[in-house]
Structures are given as structure tokens and as C-alpha cells.
Amino acid sequence: MIMIAFLLAIAFGGQGIAGAAEPIKIGFMAPYVGVFTKIGTDLRDGFKLCLDEIKYNVAGREILFLNEDDEGKPEVGLVKARKLVEKDQIHVLSGIVSSAVAYAVKDYMIANKVPYVGCNAGANKLTQELRNLLIFRTNFANGQEELAAAWYAYAKMGAKKVVLMTSDYAAGHEKAVEFMKIFKIMGGEIVSEIYPPLDTTDFAPYLAKVSNFAGKADIMWSFFTGSDAVRFINQYDEYGLKEKLKIWVDGGTVDEAILPSEKNAALGVDNYQHYAFTLDTSENRRFVKAYQMKYNMDPGQVAEQGYVGAKVIVKALEAVGGKIENQEAFLKALRNVKFEAPRGLFRFDQHQNVIFNVYIRRVEKRDGKYINTVIDTIPDVDQYWMPKK
Image (cartoon, rainbow, N blue to C red):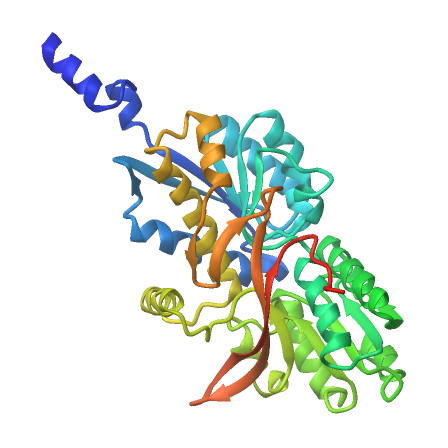
């Protein structure tokens, strides 16, 4: 018996039989109610698709996926984070849609030495002035895509005057700030800023303000998400503004997941994003097929973000042989993760935020389906991107 125990101990790399059998616990938080419901669901589904592909097992260790509804509310998110850390004893936290929730849980996760691998919330300070070795982001920093989008609007679209309208919450303001910074550096003018509250049902009062600039501004830049995006796109068209003032939007505003609800109102809308459902690469074709087979729908950017967030964790776990308890080695492995994702090559910058291509897209209808087709690409955009002189 002693000899058997000794051999088993060697086989399990010195961790001991019990230690080797313990599952790796991944905590996941997303909102499943309110304006972010669809985003939370898609993020979760993309994340789980990656875990399904590895059969919830890395290096002989089971993976437990512990899912909580943070409702998109900071106070709820903090309660759920405490539950995952103190009761469930997770090894790593992922998910999170709302930037406000991400900011709310940051200090708690750091204090408890639990890594956070965010895959949707863009709270930009988390990988900039508030960065920490425990914080990683695999989706984008708020404003990262907007840096390139503002340059493109001025340099490629010929826009010199812009109306700006976006949701009045952390992500909306952070994206707007970065867009305005680059647009002004280029020599452009922001003629109006309009901030409807999150979960606006009637955009008419705000669209009335926009109509005052038809013929005076060149484009309107906008970012909306979830059900807000659907209402905005449909009401912009219904208000008769679509042909009077061109809109230039964050790709989440016309994501594949919500295009079936926007339909013709979204046709022809130019937008930008780090992912496109129509990217013609072997990895994206494989991902799209797998997602369609599992969920009977096309993946949009949020589903891809969930998938990539999970894969980053899995790749790091593979690199350390599943030994996530060796946190120093696991964090180093996370920083060094590099692989071909559906969006293109995945890698982190020096502050643990993703670098990616920004795809310029246009909503089209093909074979009865509304899709975003890629019409241009801005390569290698990081969170500090600046136009080349």
C-alpha cells in the first residue's frame, strides 16, 4: 500500500491524490435581467462553448463553471463576487458586462488575490492607471476601438463635424472621451454631445436634438448596447434621420445577435469592431459552425468575446499543467498567451489588455440574413493607439 501511494504521488506531480482530484473553479458573472440580458446570455454561451470543446477538463483536472447573475448592478456584483470567492472558493473570476460592476469588484478581487480575466466590460482604468498584475482583459478597453474609429471618420470618411450620442454610463462616457480626443487631434469639431440614460425606451426627445444638426454635421457617432441599441437603431430610422445624417457606430450597436430585431433599419450602417462574423479564416469558420450547431444562431462579438475569454484561461492552464494553485506561474502563463482566435491573432500588451485589428464593417442583407461585411481593416490597435504622423 505504501508503494502504491508513493507511485500515485509521483504520477500526480507531488500534489497528492486529493490535490490532483480537486476541480479548478472558474467563477463567472454576467447580467441576465434588464438592458444587458442578451449580452450576458451570449457572453456565457460563448464561454461555455470553449469549455464544452475541452469537455470541462484540463491536464486531467475537472473544471467547474460557477455562474452568477450580477444584474448589471455594482452592489449586486460585489455581493456575488464575495459569494464566489468566500463560499465557492474560485481560482479565477471571468465574465462581467457592466464597466460599473467591474470597477465595483476590482479592489475586492485584488485584496483576496483572485485573478480577474474580463471578457466584456471595457472599464479602461483597470488596465491603465488602476492596473494590477491580477487584472487581465481579453475584449477591449473602453475607447480602444474608438481611437481608431475617430481617425477613420476624419481621415477616410471625410467627417469634419460630428454629433455625439451615447448612453449615460461608464462605458458610454469612456468611449466618447477617447473618440473626441483623437477626432479633435485630427482637426475635427464635436458640435454636440447627447447622453440619454441607460435603458431609454423613447429616444424621440434626443433625436429631436439630433435633427437640428442634419445638414450641419457630417456624421453622428453613437454607442448603444443590448436593448438600447435595438431601440436606437429602429427609432433613428423611424424618425427619418437615417438618410439625413449618417451614423457611425460601435459594432455592438448592430451586432449579429440583435440585427434580426433591427432588420432594414440597420441596413447600410457603417460600424467598427474587433470581430466580424463574416471573417473568412479557418478558425472563424470553425467557431461560427460550432456556435451555430450548439445554439442555432449566429455568433456576434459578445459570443466571440466569451469564447476567447475562456480560451485564454484554458491556454494558461494548459501551460502550467493545470496547476492553477501556483498563481505566479499561472499569471505568467496568462501574460504569455498567444493563439489564433476567431477575430485573428490574440495577444496581450504590456498592461494585460488585448491588442487586435479593428474591422470597418457595413450592414448588408444576404440570402435573407442581416450581416456585417468587412470593408476595411485597421491593424494592431492597442489601448494607447495613436494615428501615424
